[in-house]
Length: 266
Image (cartoon, rainbow, N blue to C red; front, top):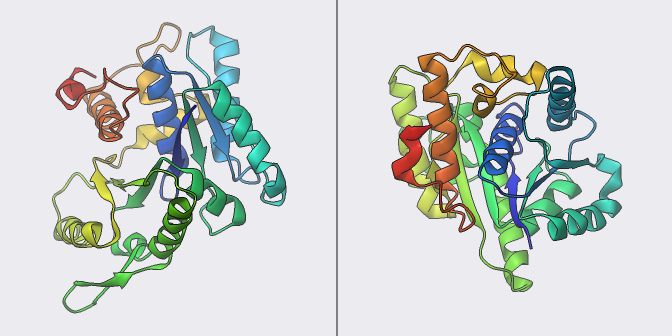
């Protein structure tokens, strides 16, 4: 049955949908059968991404892969089990994009996640969702609301005798300059990681290209495809390496070809 990857964070604007899109296309390009589920169909960022992608493929004939996709509105929580089971049985990987809020659908997704990926903008404003920091010493005082919610769902998984959750926090929109704030956020994450049980994964740098590709439904992994006709710069190559580094950090047994020593071959 499918390995379930959930993109979760209770703060909006963290880059969940962009990260989900790149993971989905990366997994498809590794030859896996992938499905996607958008649990925030009202905003529908991931759903719109695939609508744009479908339209671009129809217009250009570019051979870009598209997953089986479904979406649920907040009021459709009763359909969750049926939709998930269908996708789960038909594919090798199911990627679920959660809303940026604590909702019944989001909690359901967190319980069934084999891997939880939490994109986190590289600032203490976003860090506050998972941990409270002393304003004077910058020492981590205690886990925050989202970390507590994840812990609750982990306990539910244990009661259901499900395998332990692999929680990955990725730093997103990293500045190119090695500023003091960047170093302090890294130190705080390291301190909190062992305390609440997550791994820190390579994230994405701040790049305009991520936002530009949305209108065509493209990812950085599509730029060299026939029919896309994109100019590939060194910045794009570096961004592709970041995507492959994130894929490698998932440690999925289904992905023997995505190894850390192959990241630079993107």
